Image 1 (cartoon, helix red, strand yellow):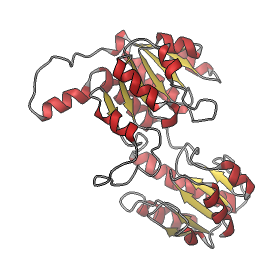
Image 2 (spheres, helix red, strand yellow; image 1 turned 90 degrees about the horizontal axis):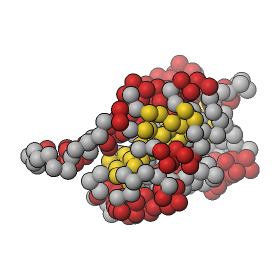
Image 3 (cartoon, one colour; image 1 turned 120 degrees about the vertical axis):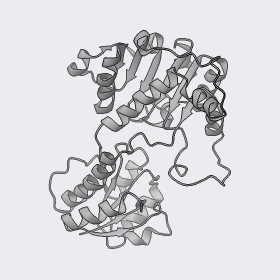
Image 4 (tube, one colour; image 1 turned 90 degrees about the vertical axis):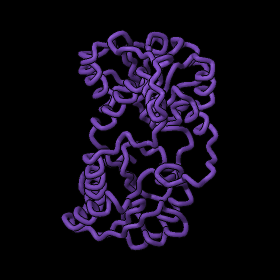
Length: 327
């Protein structure tokens, strides 16, 4: 079988793709660029296509279909960047490649600690040899209530990690799990907003929770609340977030994801003028830490997603049960 791999990174993925392709008996076509109508021809003759976070529109899905693609896998947990209606229309099955929860959970705890200890300001001062203390007094987790929205694999791991810090833990999820109750009390969402000093998001993006954090929900939060997002950018209304930071309602934020990041991350744009005003504003705040959708990025994660995305292709081609097929 043949698989065309887009967005293949030379420095960390290529060697893994070549190794696992050989082990699994898969012929690979490797492309460093995101799929577009110019390079879509590389998929011709491939039953499966392997992507990462590039937007797959109806137009691209139709082009894949015309080139004989029957299965598309994304080397991510989320798949909101894929037009699933178009996939169904053109008979293309879709799979993902979930990685272990520890990398994102570790990163989340790091962002929480950086935010409540004002680490961005501390590092900026240290870089210019300003060793003063005014304005960088932090808070301790033991004195705070942390609200976790979404208690799937990652949210649950965050709760387990935070349980050792002595903070009060509360959680919200549409589907409550008994295992979570050993770490946190489930509460209604409005109660979590009202009680939490730190709110961290670990839910997939759906039509129902688009802009879950908005003007109304922020108004119901504690003054000075800290917001952490390592899930999906569109869970937060950027304009509402900016307004609440400027007013002081939100005291700090740690953001690994932002709205409208597609086509921005993971490219070198240092000489470019970016069409993302909200990102520029958020980066300018001294109490907001922004990173480029990389909480997942660990040795274990990269190897897992390369291996499992190819295994998903192999299972599909052989008609076997595919644990990673999502649509």
